[in-house]
Structures are given as C-alpha cells and as structure tokens.
Amino acid sequence: MRFDVITFGSAVKDVFISTDLADKGNFIAYPIGAKILIKELRYDIGGGGTNTAVAFSRLGLKTGFIGKFGDDGIGYEILDTLKRENVKFLGKMKKRGLTGFSVILDSQENDRTILTYKGINDTISMSDIKLRKLKTKWLYCSSLLEESLQTQITLARMLKKRGVKIAFNPSSYLTERKELIEHLLMVSDILVLNKEESRMLTKKKDSLKGLHELTGGIIVITDRDKKICAYDGTKKYFLLPNKVKARERTGAGDAFASGFVAGQIVGMNIEESLKLGLKESESVIKYFGAKNNLLKINLREVWKG
Image (cartoon, rainbow, N blue to C red):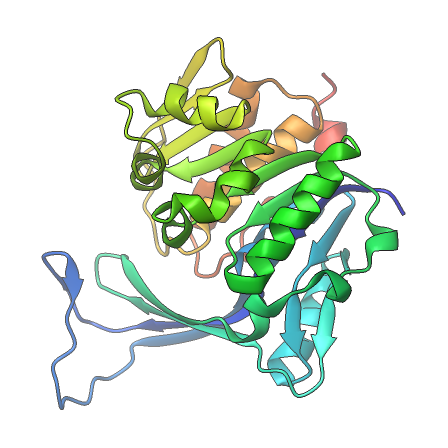
C-alpha cells in the first residue's frame, strides 16, 4: 500500500475531568487535603500521533501511524480505534509494556491543565518500525522525546532523500530545547506551531521569516483566538478565527495542523489550507475529546482544484 501520509507520534488514553473550580490567575487551584467532586468524567484515545492519523483518515487520505504502546487494556483500545478509523498501524505493540496515559483537568472557563505519562511512547527504535511498508508521500511528525525523537529524526532524513515531504508540529518541551530538533527542522517542508513555541525557536523580530530561514519550508503560526499567520518564503498569509464557544480545547492544535497539511497534500493553496485547518480545529473545540468531532469528508472529491 502507498500512503498519502504516515503520522509518527504518541498514543495515549485521555481522561477528561471537569470540576466546578474556576481559574485563579494563570492557575487551576486544587486545595490541599480537600475532596473535590468530579462534575463530568470522559475517556478517549489521544496523543498527537493518533489524533492526526484519525484526522487525515477521516478526510479520505490513505493513512498510516507509527507509534508504540503496550499489550495492556489501553493498548488494545488504541489498536481498535486505529482499525475502526481505517488507519494502518506501522509501529509496535510491546508485551508487558505500559501505554501512555493523560489526565486533562478542565476548569469552569474551559481551560485545561494536562498531566501526561509518556509510558513507552518515547522508546521507539528503528527496529520497531515496519520499514518495508513505508511507501508514502508525506511523513507527519508530532512531539516525542528521547529514543523516539532520535528515531523520528533518522526516519525523516532517510525519507526526505527519497522525495517524501515532511511536516512537523513540535510542542513547547521541544521548542524550548532547539538543539534537540535542529536536524528535524532542517528537513521540514511544513512547520506548524503556536506563537509561544515560535518565539522559543527564533529570537528574530519576524518569527515567520526567522523560522523559514531554519527550515526553508512553509511556516504556520497559530495564536489561540487571534490571527493565524503563514509564510512560504515569498508571501505572508493571515486568517482570523471565528468567534466559537469552546467547550474543550484538547486536540485543537492537532486538528488545525492536520487540516492544513491535508490541504497541502491534495493540492490546495495556502489560503485554502489555512481555512481547512481552522474549520477542523473549530469543529473539535466544540466538543470533548480530540477526535470526537473531526471532519468526515472525502477531501479530494470536495476539492477538485
């Protein structure tokens, strides 16, 4: 099988916990020694790798996923989710491995703090990957650490030499340590990140141009409810988000990035891809869960070019 895109990233079980606690400044405060009633409890499969894989698949793209999880109960839930969403698993399920797990603490203001346990997500080696099956047009890299990050860099450089396009969506724990991802930045055809992350990577006043100098690719910077910016080396693009009431923001970044990259895969221009990314993210934040309200369309049929 030849894939349109293969995602390489984390797979976790997400537990969403909502309470009646309000934000206090920049904190969600839980009193020491208190027993706090949970207002709402929800479960979902998350992680940047599976979130984006499902998003691409629901847009009608042939999609594979490289990741690692254990043969525990959560691991089989992840595997079932991938099968149900028509995503081909190209990684490894490890015997007696402990799958990643995240707790999302939501406040009254629909903001959240995430506690995440990586489990074996960060232990992916080249031997864990079914290399003979990696026939793809695009590789999408989301944030990983340690051995998995090194494997990601090795694979991205190898596939780049074969003409595969690379998209990269790093988290703040990577952008604050630029030296860890320099080699991945250098081969990225698309780099998607938020404003804070962009400032960690470049000290230049114009982050768009500064990041383009690092990658040579298309740069997209989001800023929550504020203007989205993009740059292709010759022209800057801007798009204002709509006024949408957010119920839960987990997965919004994954949804936007996968929507934008999907647009590029099928041949949309940058402006059209930005609109698709925004539509995808605004659809997700209206509901709990990073996958629950992802768009379901055949993108190639809808967009004829």
